[in-house]
Image (tube, rainbow, N blue to C red; front, side):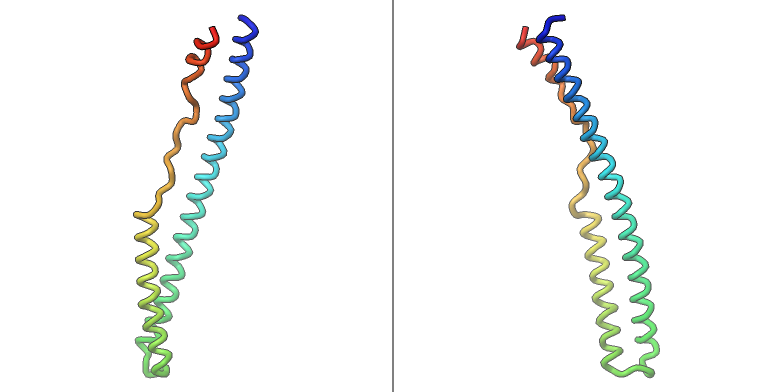
Length: 116
């Protein structure tokens, strides 16, 4: 094995190591991002139920509250419902994460042939 072949091989191994580390980093980031999105989704569901439950209670028991309080509760219910539908729509059909793909290229043999 000549000196240039050893250098090319060492460069290829280092590039592969760096690409593997980058891929592992992206994979870990995607995993954390998925957990974050899942957690935020459940928080939104809990808040939706709580706000809708409270607003629904105020609307049902409207005799015990002033007209402005009932109006605020009705508006909050409408805004919460529309906001949730919009968030789910954007989250489902919006920007999706990039698929994981190999980061290595097969140009090692091509660069090796150019050096010979």
